[in-house]
Image (cartoon, rainbow, N blue to C red; front, side):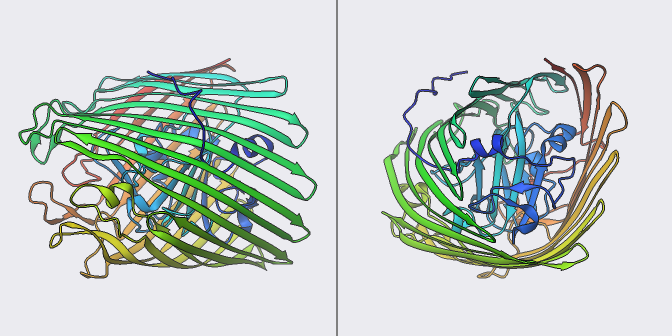
Length: 607
């Protein structure tokens, strides 16, 4: 694994959550308490989840440990409104559709750093591990008013946390699987230091379906004086995966290698009623595709992407009022070549943004309004508005309503790729209305949310002109229902989603979006044991036949995962899990069979 990144040049942006993670006190339970959980992704100022006029699901550290998922895609699959589509086994291309939005219309933040690839805007969610995670926040709905491009369906933020001491996890299982993971941290005077990482190997259930991954993450937070902190955050991930077939044709030597490098410097100042947070960051994505057997001569492709960002937020607090304002700059660049020649040579776009938000609370009413203006040197400008309110009506009942605008900027590949690229593309846009009711009493919480999103100027490939054009329209509407319970040794979360997502030009349902889906996460902690059951039901959905490329129906499926952990001693905890426990035959993406029943066992050693 190559880790020559820690002294790389830095310029870029995100949210300064590194300091917030250490300074904030949050209640972490197997099913997070909506009343007490602090969220940072749905506002410019950290707020209690009950005050946020948005649909937010927080997956806390204890739930992450109980479920034993090692990839982000598996972890967020239990969230209402989320559909995960993985093309086969671990490491294969994984997409997420959030409330019917396209996979490149969901913004992924890792400690405030965007991980969407500038080339075509997507994310491979299977390459983001769960090592050292403090929590994951899934915010559903449009959030371009806070973050700019890509936040049409919502925002998923991965937040790493502080470790006291260390934990070494060693595990292995079927199909040549082995994994070693480490999470360790200590206070060194005024400096807080945390290190996490893993090394993974696996052959997969099919020939040439291997997935190897290595990752190292370092976090340092220096308290310069009370209320002032400076941090350093760095991540390196190297992954390699085999691609077993294309359609019905075996591809025994096709593979893709992927490298990610992120480095950021967050800075925070808290003085009386004023908070100032800033972060600069640099992100690089390098991918290499190889297939020496390709009959058409497409044997190699290499892509280098870079994102440089800087972001500053200033917040003033008064009684019942919070006002935030900030600015963000971004430069994206992509170079791509293949066995057929050079496609992009340092193609780039630059964006500068101003944004602000005001939050007002009076008695039982909490109101937010935010506005952002993005100016880009390629597609011009885009203005995004978001507003919403929460009303406590008594008896633990809350009403929520919100309206938001969002956009996805055309990617560098859509703008400049030879032949299909169109530098005159405009951003895809969306408008969303949402309303919900929830009640929390004792250990119970119930919620029902309805939403509708209208999208315009969607970027499609037009065969007449053989280029990308803004001609698409889509509509997504649906209901999300949630029921959670936590008391004593038990914690449970049950949810269901009804979604109608359609292409408004053809009237056909959007691909890979099930009309009905549901999830169950059940955890019990008797004594020194932790047991977890996770069930995911995905209904019938339209897809693309991998041979004929025509529309076809993908069958519903139910997947069940089981996990158990025994705290044998204070430092030694054996554990085991079985994925797809019922050995169901199913495919998340038509034509790409998912693995059958898979047994994995391991041990956690604390020091």
